[in-house]
Image (tube, rainbow, N blue to C red; front, side):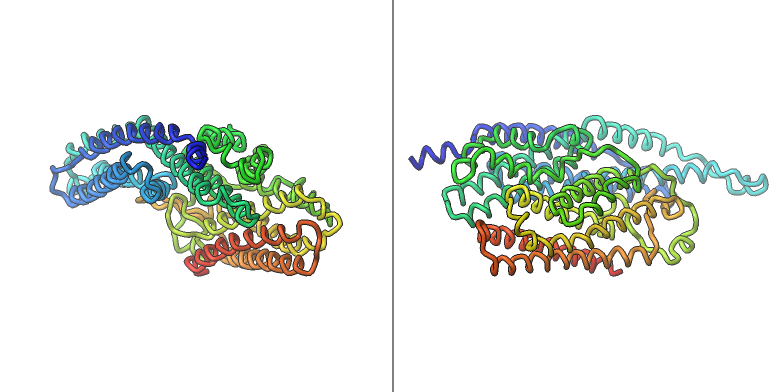
Length: 486
């Protein structure tokens, strides 16, 4: 019986198929990366020529890093989780968030353009004769080669690399769910079951988070709940996950709860044009279920509409000393540096997790009508979080104005600024609302120790799990705020 149980634990052919397909993509990518490294600039003795050689060296080094990390995947390891996570984190940071390779290539192109501008500089006749420089013909084939590489990356390597990363993400998800089943599937203890559900939600969220970065254009065309149920079915996990204490309807609810923050249903509108949701939040009053539902709509609207895409505004060209006066650096798009916007986005994700959990609790039990007092601390703490969302929205609108942006001439990087007073207000709201939510979870847990009703002990255990998870998020927010040093 034990052998049959292990055979039915998952679909082994799915894993082998994914490993083989990923290995085939790996060999194609390794070959393409090897060909990209064939770029050099050996001729020319001007100072700018030596600087271009240094920039090209950085390009080759970056290609080599991509090459080595892709080659790191080996099918013989049968899906080493540590290796998969290393590949995932590397490309998420150095490719999906911001392509370091394309940034290095752009630096070379910028230097070439500046070199050409010097040669074409139109000075007054007496000076132009004395400063005339010969046109550097050696840069012509280099510039052509760089544009060829960019085109090849865009039309061939990028789609192939994204498919490769999607396979890595899928294999990692498969192995994590398999590990959950092997460790806890036989347990009937309620606490173990709750822990298994929380881990399942975490892995689903992590999988969708990276999937959204890999395929951003097609992400919003799918229903994430149906997509994840189909994925779990293809992997053979539906039966093992529903064999102990969880039926198929409960599993669907768990997946829906994990994916609710990814299901954006609102229609696009401009920032600042959502008076209906804000008004309905105020009118919800003591109707906690209605308040939570409207809060979810506010978060969905905010995530979808309030973040302006790059290039929608033209950055200011005013001097840095003018722009920096009483200003705070809010964000650098494409940068790896922790900014106030990065911390705020992370806090938004934490709020989504908390609100989604509350919504599920309210839908699951009817006791919130007769025992609503136990939820009052949580609802009160969300008032501060609601204010944080409005202030954060104003910060994004402020940073999107041309006079509050500065473009670096050399790299083309755009810096977004907000007023120092606004930044301090936003930071204070993050600290205050975050602490209020954590305290509310603790107070609710204490209240449940004094109140006895059907399911109170089970609810108390779930609150402990959520509070531990939120505590981890709180630590990361504090570390991020320390890096900002506002």
